[in-house]
Length: 260
Image (cartoon, rainbow, N blue to C red; front, side):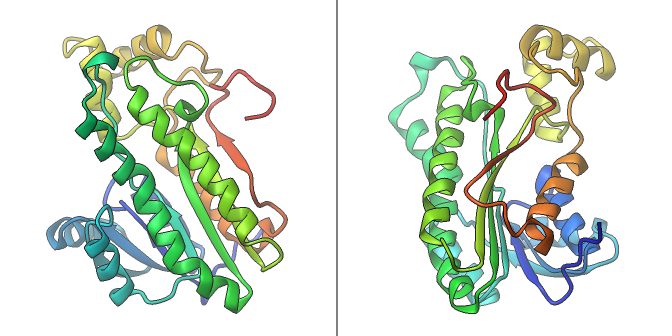
């Protein structure tokens, strides 16, 4: 299969590191012009130095705010591909999650994506082509006891994705969510260490984390960010024109169900 995104412009939120960076690289390797987003000009500039070859556009802004979204729209008034990747996570006892914590997780993980979808979907629909994706998580389906506020936001993204897919029906615009499983990123390394400690070498720490905290995984290892990016690039391509309104799993078999 040839995934050709030549002449397409993409925006990947939260793309200075981890899964977002891998997605930005993957879209660029398929020929897209890619907006790389982070909260500061410094973080975006540093990321661009490590991106390698490709047509990248610096889009520094905190898209979790209305002002940040406006700054993005000034830099990229129209995009063909929107990947809502921005997200925060962290372990916290359920009864200690405050009102402010609940609001912050919703605003960053859900409302930021809704706001950008509302801004970009009409133009895609008018042009008769577009791709919108939400990076969800296995936590959308299997709510983790140690971070139910995070799980709530990822479940919400599945509903948001399905709803906007209906709004885009018949327009040539597809809307999907990608259910990512436990993935090897810097933030996840810190999370793993918070649960299993700092004493073990990384490979042993990763195995202990998977055995004790993610035993459902059929892959039995953390997923690499590029493996998530491969699915995103496919869904962004013309080859995925009949896939919309879906929750597509790249979870290493973590979710114990035939359907999401």
